[in-house]
Length: 283
Image 1 (tube, rainbow, N blue to C red):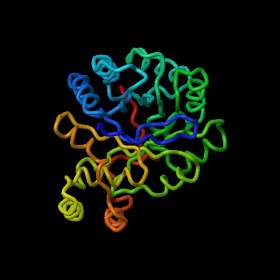
Image 2 (cartoon, rainbow, N blue to C red):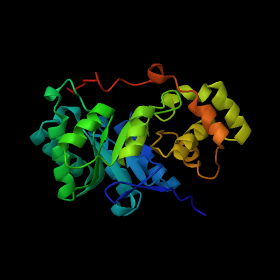
Image 3 (cartoon, rainbow, N blue to C red):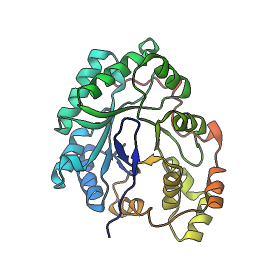
């Protein structure tokens, strides 16, 4: 029997597959083939972004996999250089054109950039609300938003983000942001779910993997699943793509879950930049 990926309900009435395939840092030349491999394995959610430079290749991979567009959930994200409303509108249309689709399942503000654009990510968010109203974005959300950013949206905007995609893994559980999401109906998507590979050699993870006869990556991804996170591991290795998919036929007990959670190092465990200061704009 084929593995059924759980769907998670969003606050807008839509659902999102809990496991996806990420294409961050996958070159355009390798993207279409990797996407086809993932779809052949059984993935039905692809996560890309304008800044990754491979949206067109994601679209090509989906089309050549022989699946109907409505059978594949696609997430993309707004380029950091396109936060001004008219720029955001043009960038969003460019995403649809690159994917060769008249809609996207989920579109996110990639970074809040509070030190850019006079800190006005609310105006950018209101443009995403337009995309949802006209049906070109089925769901909208944010990425790398901290609690104060989310509180500002709650006070000044009309739509609550459906998801918040943030760094989260055993070394940086990001509990404050996750807790806010749980309390306000915002699903957490975890990027860098294995801490860019840093947790895979951890003695605790290795010990648990031996106990449950799974790989360290499968153990960590399963931990995310049981916490309720949406995840999208990435790889160009077909064996690894399949391995990361096989995480729904075992469970971790409460004691094991807690052992992994206790690996949290707080801010020192963060692998990526801090959203309060990250200000990268593409050339």
